[in-house]
Image 1 (cartoon, rainbow, N blue to C red):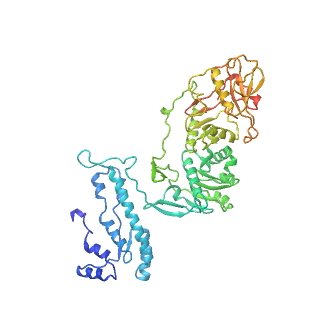
Image 2: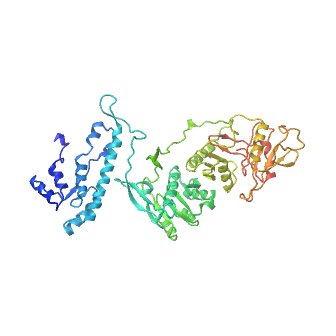
Image 3: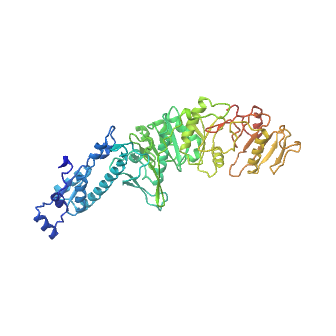
Length: 542
């Protein structure tokens, strides 16, 4: 009827599905109306989801692919699962057929499980329809199809449990991996575990952090994650070089970390990785010889990503709060050349700009406050998750294993050195006073370079040979006492007042850094050589 809109909506169909076997009144009424029992229902619903994704779709086509009779029969049969077997998933065909062939009917436990699957399927189906109907518009007097809204009016989530995990964020918490119902798993959720212990909640969190960062790069890249933050990242010509440079950034934190690569792991890289204790490794593939190398580490988890396993996450991101859910678009933004503005007199070189872009990609995956020092396609220092951005800088510098001279720095928000790089040059006394205020917070020492006298940093103490605190001819460098937690290093901030071009050093780094979205810091030529007084190497031009 009605062009095929009405086919199964009939009392004899639904009566045969719904009447209760062994219930005298139901059997009496079924006999009166000539209703025969239906014991098995198999339904494939209209392909609404795939139809909605088609290019050139019309409103009429979308509407006509809303299945009415199929879900109705499924629900009737599932409600009467004690008597009726209902199948909606082709994966269940073999099991149902085997039970019927062996016993003449299906088991009650099987029928209950299949009924649950039916209601989950129809619920998801209705959710898809609800979401897609938001594309329909009647503003022109007739129904038309519009693009999908960025944030829908309603969000329907249907998940099924795929894997129980060892434990949650803490050992006393239960946890499991859920995947979207009604379709095959993708991405990390579809990764094949080749060896190793059972995965935990924290393993998956770190693996996704590693996978998503590795996916940022086109050339061979290696990522080392510890507690959901990258402690080393590199993009080089070979996977081996990438791993070695990523490891060199922070080899202490890398111990017990989680690794991800954007290329299949080869034997040479595997040999180097095997020297370090790591929890998990994710990669698009593993060479046979690499598998043999890792086979000696029985607890090491190897996860082979499926095709598309390095694609960016494009689904809406959800975060639960008490009583609600926060929803946002995934962060797929990329900096374009015309969006960058140089606010200093010297523009960065192409090499510096390339490294800035690399550092910016890494900073995106570092928990705020985020600071990343980088050079030549590799991180040299990472400061993550501090309440103060100044502390993130301190942490990144403290962890650096090599000289930070000539590095670039990426910061995920306003850079904290007051307004040192604001595009115009400050008077020297202004810079010096700000440095003094900064140093006072660390209870350091101030040294007058010109008169070789050293003073404790108190209120307005100054060199006795200088008649004025703001005098241009008095050059200051500030020497910090060694902090107990920063063993073996002296941290310096220097200012040279004879030159309008300033330089700023950050603790172990005596200048020469490019700051993404902030500007370029120059070292005054007259400051070269004085760094050696404080155990630091000259940086030269950045």
